[in-house]
Image (spheres, rainbow, N blue to C red):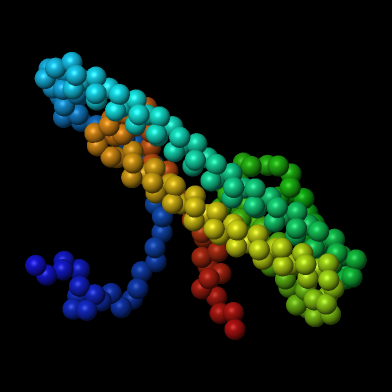
Length: 219
């Protein structure tokens, strides 16, 4: 049988396509068939019904643990973002001693450290990148600053934390993907998820500002 999708002989979409994550949570719902299935197990005997009952209990415990892992992975992103803000704050103070740094940079950092988590992680990450861009611009304007050991060390830590944030996002998205697949795993997990009113979760995505910047010409 031939492949349904053949990258060698299939039609190629020359214009390309922008990919976006749909910002929508889908609730898990089961139909009458699932109810009939559970009733039928009890009709067949007490043992099948009890076995399936324990399977649902195990499925519920599993989903509860997975839900906690989603929260843990999300908090890791938040923690790394917080550490990066602290590093950028330290760099800004060091630069301010050497040059007249844009004062709005300090205002932006103070806003990020205010503890306000009303904004999504996407928005916080975007604002952190804005501050990082300002600081990088200041360093590039004064090449001699790169020789300052404290500034060089702080910038290295900043680069390291950015890599950690990227890795943490991937881990979070992997866990979200696991959650989104498992809550639709019929029969046990899906039935439990439906009863508890669970929905799919939205993975971490790049903001519109970041997407626009990625299209810019840098060199």
